[in-house]
Image (tube, rainbow, N blue to C red; front, side, top):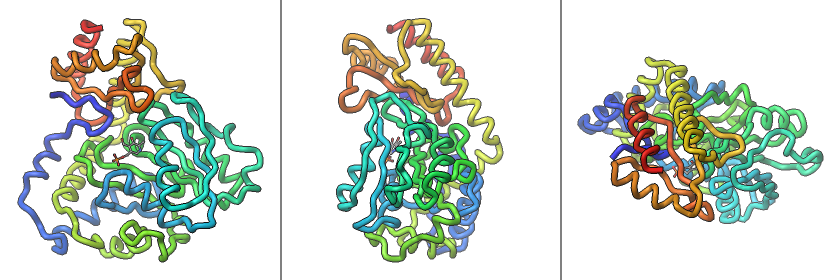
Length: 350
Ligand SMILES: Cc1ncc(COP(=O)(O)O)c(C=O)c1O
């Protein structure tokens, strides 16, 4: 089966090889030096002058850790949401009894600086939460304008961005877009198995880390202390770290423009295929990392099944979008020739 889902994504041979290596102990010097390499390489990937913490959880754990480590019961948060992943902020905040205001837009719509309330500075928000890419609709939010505008209108508010289907797939700069907390996940642009999240902290986010987080396990203050010693707090998954080292080594060797161009070229091929079949992209501001497209007459799942029979796996629409849209990923080790074959099968089946 060819994985064309927006995560997990096809792995590179170097990563598969690393996963086959013999187990090393997570307190050994070999582990520590691999860990140190990963931390430094992630700082370059995130474009931050702070630190990037590696958590052994899926991306959602990185989101939860970010909220647990900064928020206290009387804090107020502003959430921007136009899809299933935007809703996740609210799910975590409700579980923690933290108050939040929600600005909601239709699915497929996007946020930019002009959506910030004019009186945002008066609300004393501790944090603003948004996705860089809303994966459920293939939509890119304008985090650069949001970050810059928030920094000038409400400089005390921490800017927390879920960059899970953005970091590494297209240009995102933690420093440039004034992001305090930037979360990513292993099964997306780095094309690793799920199971690691990466949390980039700006220098001021590091200064504000609260030792008394509302979770013991998801406590970024404690994580940072261990990670300064190139140690995981609890048992480390050596295989995931070795695979991460391989993926980051490859990223450095090929260069970020290789990855960005590859994602963009598959995205463009998909856009042309949709156009030739008079199909519509679902998003008002499409992300390069995946394409969400509409299939009329509630026939999306039928097409998905037909493609699966031809050994191509796409992702369904979520919630109310089930059977209305399909999503195809452009991240990971997807060779151009293989994608071209997929496109011609796709066109035949429409
Ligand atoms: C934007 C976004 N946020 C959060 C998640 C949740 O990540 P995970 O399934 O790794 O917990 C995903 C997963 O696809 C995502 O795309």
